Length: 116
Image (tube, rainbow, N blue to C red; front, side):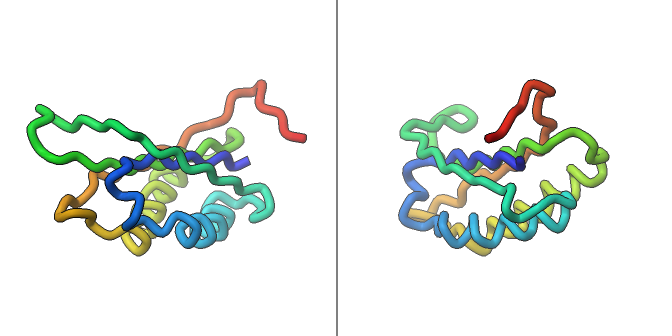
């Protein structure tokens, strides 16, 4: 815990410093969510096809999902979403003149979550 998943459009691959983002993200999440840095894990998933709105323009999307053990207030989760998006702006440049649509979501892990 936290389990972090970053889905990103293939079109931003060359303009997204994923390694740098993850290394900056982990201490930020540990501090804001009051958890241990060693518990943070991020995986990146490239999305080859993305459609935004009516699909007529170029589309680029980055979505960050953070799953946490239960216990954080809605205010802490909202604050975490904001700081994650602020940080993302430092590691993601517009690609091919397209500014990506970015989003972040904080959610609780299910009670069945186990780690070894």
